[in-house]
Length: 377
Image (cartoon, rainbow, N blue to C red; front, side, top):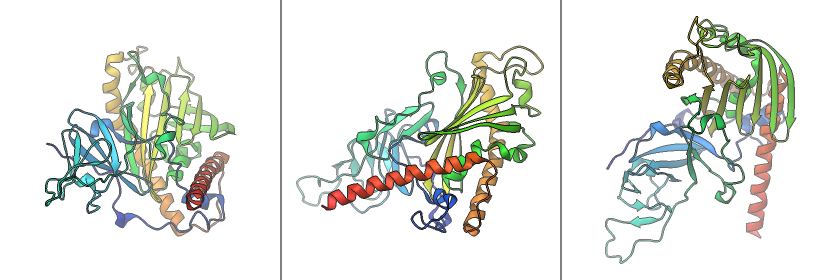
């Protein structure tokens, strides 16, 4: 019997009301800042290493609380975070074997979300036929993924394939996550808008960026910059600039995900988890075909790469993302106070991102309205 909670959602007292609703919004920025994300995609919700066997945690997708638990034999499951008895959060309970047990009265739930056992039936001859909603779960790339939408559609939008992170010759990668008090669209705007290089002048992950491509294709926005990649005081020592073309980068907002590619050797993916209107958890996968030893034209052995990336996450990438966290949280606060001010965007990619976000949310709302109308009829 084990129980361990790892909170990822922000306390309700921190959540502020959106200054303008999606329906009442008049500008593209206002609509983007009020939009949710289509639940009919797979969303990363936690790092696999953070959930030990026999533990349960609460995760939140767009204000919907979900109990994510790992059975004693290591299998991941997810259910609506409420006991059908008194509606207490199941994440306050514990895992016993392969069942999730409510911490209040000890009601036990099986893999189907059904009540399987009630310790005291008070004369009843059978367990009440009650259940809570379950969610499809997968584990890939060191992350736990949920499909919060219609489970029948889970195969339509699969988790992105990252061949470099599969198989015996996979590249080294250590997931990194950060929670920001900002709307998910603010985070997406930040990661591909290279006009904010000034913010990172200390670390210089990119600099002197010139946008050479900005093209919306379906649900994707493709970008390219001519820019100097990895020229920081420390990072430049590990990147083989003589061998690689680090003066160009390709990026894409592949709704609802984002990725980048530098010369097919330096890559990353970003997976956002929209928690509520002003809270987002961002999961980053940075991975490299290889890095070099400082001051030497010698590649770091593959077996040592994971250790190097762990150190880089703590000493370099984490602090870099910390700068972005401060910036996007400040932008969120500024928007909430000055939401009706004109939106001034220098980089055209931001409008393209926001346009996709708004359209996808509008399409989701339209589908939900059609389903409600059909069920009402």
